[in-house]
Image (cartoon, rainbow, N blue to C red; front, side, top):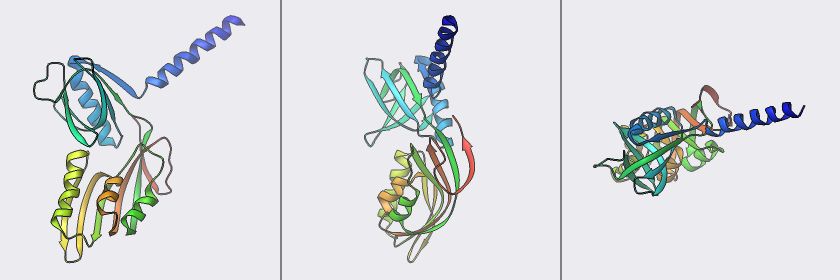
Amino acid sequence: MANKKVFMLIAVIALLGFVANYYTDHYLGGEIYEAANEGFDLVTKGFNVTVFVETVDGKTLEGELFSVSGSTIYIVKDGKRLTIGGPSATKEDIMAKHIEIEVKGNVYVYELPPITGKCSEVIEQLKVDSYSERFSGMIFVKGLTDPIEIGKLKYAVDYLTYGSIDVKQSLPDGVILTAGMVPIGMLEEYIGDKEIYLYGTLYVNSEERNLPFKLLEVKTP
């Protein structure tokens, strides 16, 4: 009986170890390109990807992954974009000796029906307990006609996130935008005071299904 209990305890510990590491991949030195490919695949699925880095001089940092190019990883830390390369990198901001890429939960893909109202109020309806929420689709923004305001939104999305904002059509009383994987918090930040009409797809990286919309797909790491 005692041996049976010991065996069960070992099995439980092993299982917990597997679960704890399931969403974390580790990369060393020359394997930096593997981290880039892994991270890019996860980001495009809608996951919020955290990158933990140990540099060649022993420093540590973390940031949110938003893009890769070849073996270069791009992260955002404290509102700034940084590039990460391998231990012998010359062009990147950071030379990495060790990298961990971490994601949590699943990505629940919802069909978002047409919604109209003040942007901040619409976004509030969509906010749930999650790691990230991203929107793809069409947005009509009433009163957004200033190219500078549009440019600020586009710059923030294109430069600091894995996402895109483009002008589909300019109208006398507003603008129609096409959004691709845009964090909903960024929409709230830049056009929260304006009336909008939107529809499309919402990607929610969370632990469970927590919105009442039609579920199109569930993506796992």
